[in-house]
Amino acid sequence: MCGIVAYLGDKEAQPLLLEGLRRLEYRGYDSSGLAVLNGKGLEMVKKVGRIEQLERALGPNPLHGSLGICHTRWATHGKATEVNAHPHTDASGKLAIVHNGVIENYGTLKKKLIEKGFQFRTETDTEVLAFLIGFYFDTLNSETENRLEMAVMEALREVTGTYGLVAIHQDQPDVMVGARRGSPLVLGIGPHEHFLASDVAAIAAHTQTVAHLRDFDVVTVDRQGYRLKSLTHNAPDESGLEISQIDYQAADAEMGDFPHFMLKEIFEQTLSIQNAVRGRLNLEECTAQLGGLNLSPQELRDIDRIVITGCGTAMHAGIVGEYIIESLAHVPVEVEWASEFRLRNSPLDRRTLVLVVSQSGETEDTLGALREARRKGHRVLGICNNVASSLARETDGGVYMYAGPEISVASTKAFTSPTIIFVLLGLLLGRMRFLSASQGLQIIQAIEALPDQITQVLKQSGHINQIAEKYSYSRSMLFFGRQMQYGIALEGALKMKEISYIHAEGHPTAELKHGVIALVDENTPSVFLCPKDGAYDKNINNLQQIKARKGPVIAIATEGDEEILQQADDVIYIPDAPEYTAPILSAVALQLFAYHMAVILGRDVDKPRNLAKSVTVP
Ligand code: M6R
Image 1 (cartoon, rainbow, N blue to C red):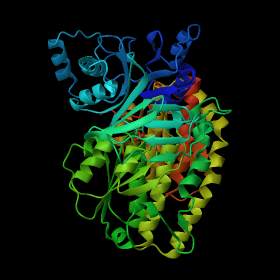
Image 2: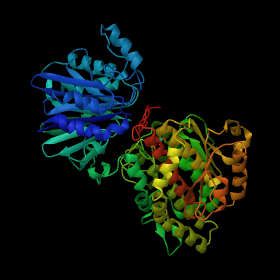
Image 3: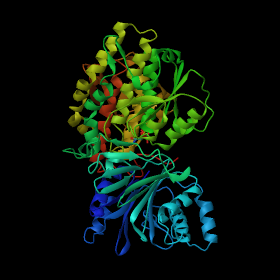
Image 4: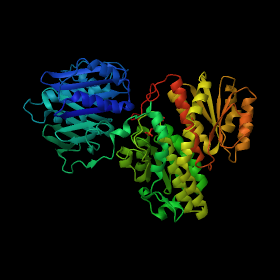
């Protein structure tokens, strides 16, 4: 879960590489490094910490050269130290590689290389790979034209695991070789220049013409252009790469006037919800149309069970989705952590639909779940934001979020977009079963009302900030929600803990009295999700149990509910909405709550400690 950028062209590489790296910092940020090739050989600088540290180090002494590679790391093998940071060099110090992924058999390879007399300097799997490629490079005749390419391919044939990598070598100063297996790598094609990067975000400011490498592709870029080979056969790959124009404005990945990406992305939800819904409502039939599912009406009717899987925020959206789909369509739904699903023998049958949810489409455990279900012959659909992701390629169909880039590590749009897509799915499946046209129309109206209602919640940012200020002393917080708000309690707690580092737990409200209440005291605030719905009275009852134990309560309630003012210490109102769209409104309120708390506590909101945006390791 690191970020790679590489450049070969007619410009100075360093500024382009650093700019790209900044756009990838969300992928990991405990150390970074940059290497260039020029007439003087391989020059490299690595630093622990944020990319700013690297920029500061390079500021007075820039590295010159028009071929270079760089990397931002999130440690998996080995601590976050300068020596463990990428690029890694081979034994000769002339070859450098940057690598994302995990070399699973690095122990065996390392032993073999040690037996040959090599001595390692780091604890990383990537160094082993660099040594292996260097070893093959040195065994090839120096006149060999494709020497680096051949060395990379020889080495990768011995590797088990995942990689997106780029290699350069001082003795071939006009060549870079990229390869992919399991970890994304995209080739950017510009006039007189090429880029390789783990995400289009890194290069979109310079070219919109890209080709996504497929697993086992090896691409060699030189000053004349690029050529493609595949590890599954040695000859040039005649099928070539599919070149596409990306619809990605670099400005989308800028903060604009917002102080943090997270706040920008919270505010973007009025638009991202519209994007998720656009063209998907059929007013005439009072239903939803989701062409990307690639399922005939008969196949949709035949679904008798849905399994939703994902990780983190995506999984929490799935929990809300379970309640929504079961309520609107009466189709049984189960939600499983992708990391569990992929390893167990989950009973699925012919009519079970597996739905994988992921913003990035690159989360290792989610892809593992997808592949496990497909290996068993099941149809798997995706709800995904990244249209160029592994998940988008490997699923049988699905629904894109169209939420635009999400840079902040803490997901916001990636929660509300799949949630509204579950409403669309519930509507579609419900209308094929027992929902009447007038019920379908009511759901459509509730969906259409959402953007304005989200705006109403956003307007309370100042008020929510004051509440956060009041409770910023807290060491621990509890979040309670029932039914469709249960997933919001989980997500609200996740947002709070991941960016403010306040311990936070989410629970189904009624579970309070089965244990959690022991945690309640005057210093432990409880966030109570209690909109005016069928469970309101029960919620108030539970709320009073907390008050009786002197626990402060912050209620998320429906506009117009005066009674709650008597019960709770503080109230955040959300507009009146049906139970299936209300979770989106309370989610936005709790995103703001966590955001303000993190700012008040001086946390690094967009890049919380120990986390990365895209978790591409198991
Ligand atoms: O890219 P994905 O949606 O697959 O990511 C899954 C989780 O890593 C992610 O939702 C994570 O929990 C959030 N970024 C936390 O805010």
